[in-house]
Amino acid sequence: MTAPLSPVDGRLLAGLAAGAVRARLSGERLTAQLPRSGPVHADGASFVTLERGGALRGCVGTLEPVRPLHRDVVHNAVRAMQDPRVPPVTVADWPELDVKVSVLDQPADLPAGSRRVLLEALVPHVHGLILTDGARRATFLPSVWAKLPSAEQFVDALLHKGGWAAWPAGMRALAYGSTEFQDRSPRPPL
Image (tube, rainbow, N blue to C red; front, side, top):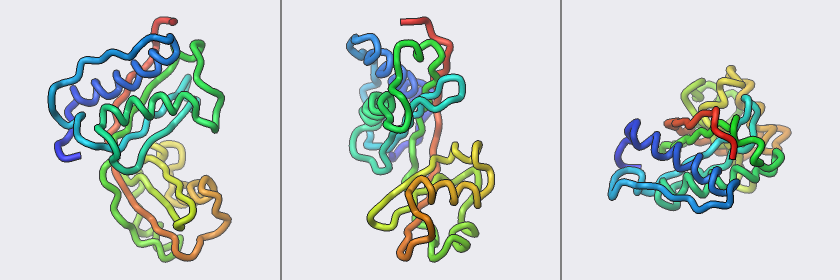
């Protein structure tokens, strides 16, 4: 992402994500008016989180820019509807579905020689975190700090998510920030 996103860009991206979910649920075609140029056309990495009444209904994204941001958001919104960790999103979810788009900054390496070293470098409530040992990879968005407020809880839960019972040799940690935009319920039923 080269240019910063404006609030108008954010509303557009959140609306695109919600529109993609609505189109998939209703069987209609997604139509959207995009600006001719601007940051939503630059390659970008995003996550789309779907929640109903505060309960996770799906969260899927990309960590590296692989396509124009507006396409990445639509792609991830549709994939989030089928997040394998939770039941698929249905028409019944739509009226209460909150849609959040997180646009990720470029990840940067953090020291990760040990859990303690990482905990000292990690900035709570700011950093999103990617852990990888080369074979597995797991991430938490910066918004996860709201549910796991201490650095110890955050790192331990991410280790668990990645399937690591202990700190593996060769662990790599990358931190990133994100900018979040939302399209909140309530919505008319489909």
